[in-house]
Each structure stands twice: as structure tokens, then as C-alpha cells.
Amino acid sequence: QVQLLESGGGLVQAGGSLRLSCVASGSIASGNIMGWYRQAPGKQRELVARIGSENVRNYADSVKGRFTVSRDNVKNMVYLQMSSLKPEDTAVYYCNVVFWTAWGSRNEYWGQGTQVTVSS
Image (cartoon, rainbow, N blue to C red; front, side):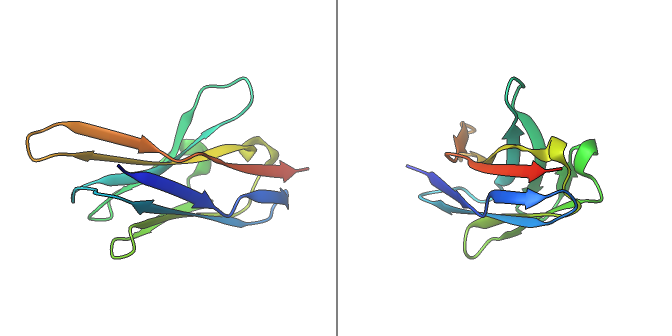
């Protein structure tokens, strides 16, 4: 069983920075994609950023140039460095991992979420 544990959320003023961390435990196949999603009240969960095991990155347009996703494959960790935070970044942020087994079965897991609140 795979488990994801996030940390690093909190309250920050607009223009500030936060760093989220997520550690994955359990059996995760190589070639996986780790990432961050967020869900604001009354809105659907959306992709923030993701990174493949060979460091190919994707970002939501709304965070490009402000957020940076990175990973440590040895520690099975993924990070999200958030800068120039805006009130509209306020949401619960979820860590996510997707990987495929040798026989092609897709597996996806989620963390429990960490709250990020940006005050104006």
C-alpha cells in the first residue's frame, strides 16, 4: 500500500513564500509521476504542477513563474516551492503519485491534503 504524507502548509501573507513537501512510502514503480493538485472551496480539484521521474515538469498556467516542483528520487519525496503567493492560491493542496505496473495497470494515490491560506 502506498501512502503520501504532506507537510509545509500554513498561513502566509500575499507576496510571501511557502514550501510544501510530500514523502511517499510503499511500493512505487519507477517511471512514476509525482505532483501537486489543489482544491479551493466550491471549486474542482486542479493540477498545480507535476514532475516525472526524469524531471519533466508541467505547470498550471496560473502558477508558472511563481511555483517550482522538484523531487528526490532517493528519498521518494516531491516538493513544491511557492513564491509570490496570491490570495487566489488559497486551497487545500494534495500530493499525488501515478505509476504503472509491469503489466500496465495504472495506480494513483493521494495524500490527505495540507491547507495553504494566503491573506491579502
